[in-house]
Length: 276
Length: 287
Image: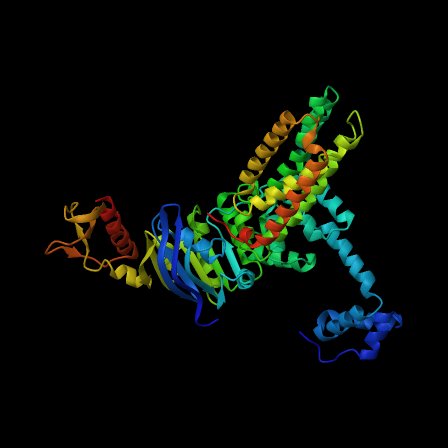
């Protein structure tokens, strides 16, 4: 029930500013629970006044503590890095950004790095495996068969292309960090230790471009198979060691990456709907 | 919202050699519309096209006056659409709240405070407050369907596309769903596909029967029952003239088909009409 009297606007301003005597404050505090009009006036004055920022911070803290969403280590890290909370949430639903995925990839890279200590063929194995880590991660990040809520997401207004890019960039950054850490353990830290980087980008972009035609899993399997075959054939035909990773090879990967990026940008609407 | 919220013109869709939809033309208005049909009739394909998830091979779809073939207009349609797929996938490690919150982000609700309020509203509407913090993998099938419904209700959409919303629900849950859908259909367009003729009879002002990718009936539940008028009779034994016949709880046989002279005709039900309509086509298919 609204009472038939209202506090004076001046009194409310003084109350909000903390410039009112104890009796006046007690009177207002007794009145406002039953008067929506004065309550709204107080809320408006607080929102305009110097208390707005500290109150918002306090409210934010309360929300933080009563947040019904559990946030994992990676999600908290993403927020701490400075990305918005809702982007972190989108990443939390990405299979290839889970600790179990990183553990599996670390083991694969660890074995490849270990093999590199044994022989030149071992180094070749590391250079073949390292670009496959981001490729696999991106393929498992988004699409039919890998994202359980894929169909619900397609019907939502957030563009699939945007979601794909957000997840792919996050997975790529994490995977490259992992591969770089593994590369630091190689026996010789020369050019070969970084020779996997450009092929990684190229293979990932080719996979993304192909996923506008077929499912991301099929695209990844095809690209991975083609990659292994291409490196092995080049290695067997060329007299130079690690031929696919030298100057001309790196240039070819740059060109492939640019072409794939152009195809992906051109066909971004194709991933906005299902083909079957 | 007045007039046709959804307009389909000559929609065709095939999967390899299978023709899922063949020339479907419909106008759907505010209220609850039921989509009935046997397995493989094309219901899910039609709903996925309406949800803008799948593109038709041919034909035109407009929702709320917007053309789904144009990317910008499609985006606007999605802003006003709630979709519950037949088999909604879940991130099963998420809680009900977390999953609906995740979909809310996909629905462009980025501010946490307002988004969480909207998630709470949708969960409350779906009757999920008590289990909001439970993991989805710990929920029953009926509860999961409610989670799927809750995500469809986010943002108070003007058009709701619900694929088999009552499948797998126990009788009490089904009644709760009916109550909720009836309430939702008061001021928006709700299209539900179902196998359950009782749901259609209880809820829908209009129903569409699909068979082999074509609309074979478009009318009211009464129109469907009328298909069987004069073709349902009771007898003490199975009548050889009947296409379908079963023993009822009273111990007599309910026969459906071309009634013999002097048969004791009874008032047809929606189910009788549906069985005749689709059963006849099924018999022709088998011949």
